[in-house]
Every structure is written in structure tokens, then in C-alpha cells.
Image (cartoon, rainbow, N blue to C red; front, top):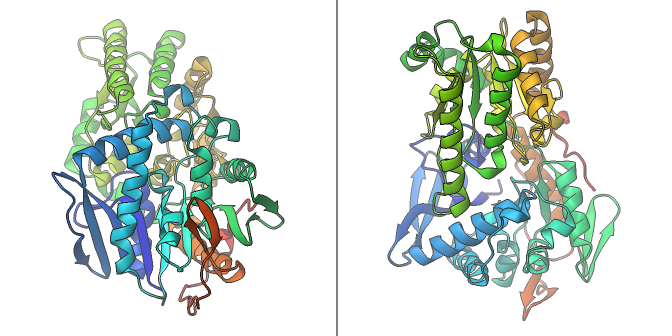
Length: 497
């Protein structure tokens, strides 16, 4: 079997488990089944770069490296999260750019490649993940790595004119194009990337989902990330009887609960969501004392000024809602900025009559899928979902809203709260059917099968030499027979451009 090498910014601790949503949720099942090597940052900031630390858990090797404070400040906090994150979400007005951040970003990508390359084996499949590592495909080719390389972007990809606001945009596009397969969450993201890449000199669009890059071809397509719906449903059902969930249930005193689960992030639309909840209480006063809104938004990236400002504004807005509408025995809004265990969160989701998932822009949003899976089939809640989340394409039976339209979101919450049981069940069945036909394992197998096909069709990879791409030296590229179970029929990649 070809060994799978996953490269991501953060490597999860095998003992801690994954939180709700996120990259680790999508990959942990695949890695547990296939085994392989998972390489990336340890999450530790140290005084000086150190060697690779390797731990083995079951059949997976977890190989991690520390970042220095300078690398963390410029690579992670600076270019990755203050520049790329808002830009890729189509919010260039929130972007903070410093050329030194961009230089350190590329230097960290280069150091990671230098530490990973000696660990690779001839038959490896390399799968790089997300916006922290955009330079890595070209840097790996420059080190002589001839293995099949796939790259998957978990966040959206904006229109070419928005991405062009970044001074390094053309260089990053060229560096990504050193991969054999580039995967995105939605057809729109794949199309946006192809349009942006086609403006790079020497790149042409080809039929059948390919880009021509010099003398080679790169495949581009959409591979929506999935959850293990039945597993999450079982977890939620079990957790519903746990003491923490029982305490929450008692605290509601019969009120219907609205829940939101998000990182504290400008792209999640939390301020707009709080505004919609206020409008619900203003426009539909019958819900006062009858509902309770629980928002769990773990604080993140507090080194970034925009995140600190958002937290202050959210705390002020939540306080104002509670001051204006609260009663001595009723708190309209409970806002929590601490993370919770995934199992406990699943129980909270099952308890909620309404799930509010209203990002301004999101690549997929697995929390939306988890909320659906967590519901009691006999008495399910209703998902109110932003149409700007990638999940909206699969969960069309949710109440789809424009998160910027305060009245529309408030009306949708009211509709969800008053929806008859038969309609709630019908909508839930439609969404659950879409989820249970897919799985993270099938998603991963589909991507890897597409990677092997792309690598076998395309000419030899390229190397970056002196700022230009040239063909790599002639060498046998042995990928062997892929020991992949056939993916389910529903798991064919959609939207190949």
C-alpha cells in the first residue's frame, strides 16, 4: 500500500481528540484506518528550532516541529491569519499585510519541507492541507520530491480580483501549481482558483478539469469534506444523558434552546447573528422568556487585533441584549468563549430546537452537518444556515438565509421555532440522507484515488529553479498499485472544471 503522508499546519494530539468541526475531524478516521505519517507544527513555541519529534499511536506516526516566537508571530499570526485568512474569505478590508510576514511565511514552509523530505519513502502519497502551506508543493519539487502531491484547501477561494489584492498572489498560485491535484470544498472555489491561475503566464485551461502548466497538467476539482454522521448521531444520543447536558436541560426551565457553535472569528457572522436574535425578540415578543440562546465561541487568534476587537464588541452586544430584554429569572443570551469537549457539544446540539450556523463566508462548515446528525429523529431541531457556507449546497433542506439580512435571519429563527413536527422531520430526513451516504473515509479515498490518477496521467513534476519552473530530471516515479478500497459511487469528485 502507498503510505499516506498528511501535512498540515497543526498536528492533533492523538490523546486529546478532535473538537467540533475542523480539519482533524475530517482526517482522523482516514488516518486511523490507513495509517501513515502526519507531519506539521506541534503547537509549541520554543526559543530555537529543534529536531523533529516523532510519536507513534496505533498505526500513525505523528511527526511535529516547534516554531520560534518570530516564526509564530510572522508566519502564523501575521501572514497566515492576518493576511491570508480574511483574503481567502473574501474580506480584503480586514487584511493586514506586511512583506516581512510574507518572507517568514515562505521561510517556514521551506524549513518544514527540509525536515519532512528526509522522512519520505519512494511510494508515499503526499497530501498537503490548507492555507498555511501554499508554498509547499513547489518547495517539495525543488527538493527533488517526485511523489504524487495533492493539496486541499479547507477554506474558500475568492474571486481572482480579490485574491489579486495580495502582492504575492501570482507567486503563490505558481507554487500551488507544482502539485498534481488541487482540491477545494465547492465548485465555486475550484472555478475561482482556475480563473485566477489562468491569468498566470504559461498557464492555460484545458478540457476535463485540467490546467496546463508549461509541459504538464494539474487537476482541479471540488471534494466536499464530510462527517461520519451515524457515529456523531450515536455520540449525541449517548451524551444527551450525560450530567453536563442534564444540567443545561434543567437550567432551561422548559424554554426552547437556540444554539451556535463557532470559533470567535470575524468570518463567522457572530455580530450579525446577535443582531438577528435581538430583532427576533423585538419583532416577536412572544418568544421572550420562551427561548434561550446559547452561543459557544471559543476565543482564538487573540494575537490578531481584529479578533481582540471582535471579542470586545461581542461582549458589549451580548451584554446589551441581556440588559434590554433580560429578567431576574431569565437570561436571553448565554455567550461562552471556552471550548468544550466534542462529545458534550454533541449533546448540547441534540437538545437545541434551532441550530444557528450563519457565517459570512465558509469553505464548508462541518458544525452544520454535525448539528443535523445530532438530532433526535423523532423530534428534530431545525438548522438555520447561511447560504454562503459550503454546506448549504448539500443541506438545501435547511432554512437558508443571507447572514447580512437581519430581518430575514430573525424571521427564519421564528419559522424554525414554530415549524410543525412533520415538516421538521421531513427536512431532517432529507439532510440526514445526504450526510449518511458520505463519510470522511470515502472523501479521503476519493481524493487519493484522484491524486493517483492525476499523477499517472500528468508528465513528470516540475522543480522551481531560480524563480522559474522546469521539468524535473527523468526518473522513475513508482506509485505502485493503490491499495485503496473503491470509493462509494456518490463520492465522485464534483465540479471538476
